[in-house]
Amino acid sequence: MIEIKNLNKTYKRDGKIALKNIELEIKEGEFTALLGQNGAGKTTLINILSGNVKKTSGKVFIGGFDLDTNELDTKKIIGIVPQEAGFDTFFPLYEVLKKQSGYFGIKDNEEHIDYLLDTLSLTEKKNSMLRELSGGMKRRVLIAKALVHKPKILILDEPTAGVDIEMRHSIYDFLNELHDSGMTIILTTHYIEEAERLCDRILVINKGEIIADEPKEQLMEKFSKELQVTIYFEKEIKLEDCSFLMDYRPEVHHKNELHLTIKKDEINTAIQMIAQKNMHFADITIEREKLEDIYLSLISNR
Amino acid sequence: MNIFYNRIGFFTLFFREIHRFTKVSVQTVLAPLISNLLYLGIFAGILSTRSAGIDGINYLQFLVPGLATMGALMAAFQNPSSSIIQQKFMNTLQDLNSYPISDAEKTSAFILGGTVRGILIGTLTYLATIPFVHTGIQSPVFFFVSLGITSFIFSSIGFISGLALEGFEQMNFIFALIITPLTYLGGVFFEASKLSGILGMVRFINPIYPLVNLTRYAYLGVYEENIVVHGILAGVFVIVTFGIALYAFKKGIGIKIN
Image 1: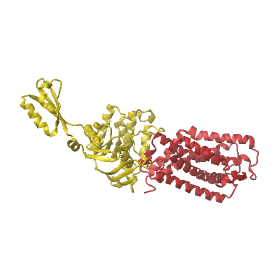
Image 2: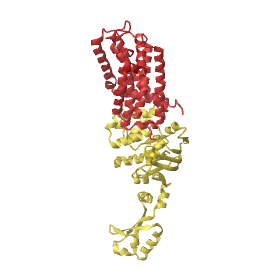
Image 3: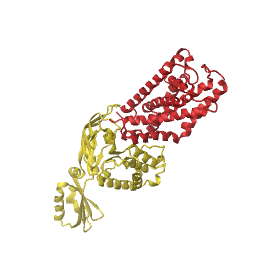
Image 4: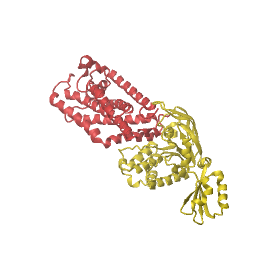
């Protein structure tokens, strides 16, 4: 759906190299997270796709259309939710969405606009001027604007910044619904748990280069060096009873829960050690490192 | 790249530009109209019986097409320039980059939106003067065409300024130091050819002078200097200003980051 070949961007204003030899292919229906620190190059990449920034070199294909020769065709299939909320202060919300439809060559789009307003809980505000809306509502308006022409690809640049938790979850549900319907989605976010929860592919960009690009499960499997193991004992236990497990940084919680941090290939050894001590446990849970930990370790290694 | 790519998109953008100024019509339509009528009232009070230097034409008859042209060009300049600068402040100008509308369509939509406002102000100025100056238009079609050409040229200049300028202060600077002096030296209030010295020479490089002359010819049927030459000059201005506007937009001046 999106193919990027040897993409480079150096800003003329200050000579800053924002993207270096980016090679990327995003397939139809993928839900991809684009992670990176501020200034890593995420927004530059998105702005090249949206046409706001001119690339220095390389090729970009969107839906099979070459950005250099068929730029207008690429715009019909892409919807962008920008990071910074800018709003037309002249017209009320419904009028803004009708005009947005018109810009994409769609004349009678009332049904779809009503669906978007309803889904994004904006129906009550359809006649309000945009300046009257709260920050969270403005974010949702940006999503509605990006979807008004039913794009095949949706790119969201930090869509939930400033949105309250309840509404954030409602946006997650909506994005999942869009993904289930076959839409290709690219999400940049500072909330790593958002990427972990929603996306099936993780891209990490650092200093203009892609330093990780893998399916989420594979990435977490590959980079997860330690496991968080919680063992639930039938009886109360004390930390001093677990001195033989000191290598695994034991902690006792709620009197009968033992938390251990164990390297992936040592888990059997640890459990055998517990069994040999005749310590009977009722249950065991094993959690991998969170994506956030993996992300931080990837960034800090550079 | 197709020039005509998205007809609905073009018309949506074009009508947005019209819708925008009609929503604030007190500032955009009524205010310039009152301003022009004040000019007429002041000059009617002190110079109504003065001859304009053209046989059989009194000063007020001479003044009406000048005011109509001035009103048209100023309104036409302000529409795209203020629209673009406002969008820069609202952080919405870059949205234009995401629309599947060709550069020629986007440029034309802004410029034609300004042209409509210019023609409207020029026409309303003429209509408002009818009770005071009992003169019919010699050639109504040519009068509207002339207002249209004037408005198109200055809407193009306004479009270029909007893209190139950072804010309203810079726009006011251009307006006060370039547009207004050229308007006064362009034959709106008096025959520019009667000016002597450097001020008189300015008319040869002043794009407003031939435009005022064309509108006056359409209104009165008389002209100050060679009307064919001024007609050709107006045509050249149309092509050059639109060409520069389109080039500036294609280059992404003020709208894309290089």
